[in-house]
Length: 376
Image (tube, rainbow, N blue to C red; front, side, top):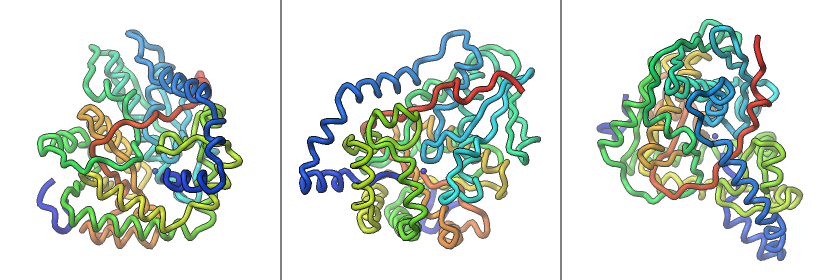
């Protein structure tokens, strides 16, 4: 399924320029230094520990840790894991909803699908292959039944601790056709279609749709407030919560929280954000759109699994990914975007740019003890 002109084939903080402009204007540069290199070193150590390789014979907690390294909206980590006699269940943590940007919990269930796929890949790699049971998904629960088999590792498993959402400009270099085919093959999940947009005309059209969605969101004070609440402006704040969007992961300087919130309110504007997203998409090799066969929780989970596999394969190939979901997050922009894609009344579920770029600092996750209950 290809959009016009094709022949084959979760929001960021204010830009670094904005922070630096304000720093120059107010003499705030010393505030960034006050955030402390020691705190940043502690942050990087914590991120590395969270991504430590799994032992040869892991317990469920180790597998859950790898599951939590999955992509998720705003890094809210909206999941809870419970041990069962036959395996593990994953349930949504409704206290971590983002009701403004995600009023129907679409992103939340996509995030659960990402986590489930990480768990399935990791458990299979250690001789405990799992099967995902959708019977309880209508009630919000995913059950994974585990069995025993020969350990089966693959490149996707090896990529789990290295995958990240790289929210920066890329180098604008094209991706080899063979690599695109590998991305398509890895992301193949029943009930999900993948559209790859790699030509300049197509990417420019995506820019227009992203700007339309972003403009609507920037005009909504509730959206802006919700996003700000999930931003962590310095490593200390990020380590205190273990979640959210840490400024350093988007290339921005670290500053005290009180000052960061002021900076955000002063400089988070539609024109600057539109310019940033346009540059980021134009610097990307392409855009991937994931479309579920049905618009329901089961298929949202399936989309999450498909994207997670895509992102892990991209990581294995040295390709970066980042979400540009604005066209699917605004109700009156989504059908226009779907019409351009040529998918009729189907719902486009995720929009992801990809390309090559240096890595950014990794985001944190909450400890396993915060997300894993002993049994149900």
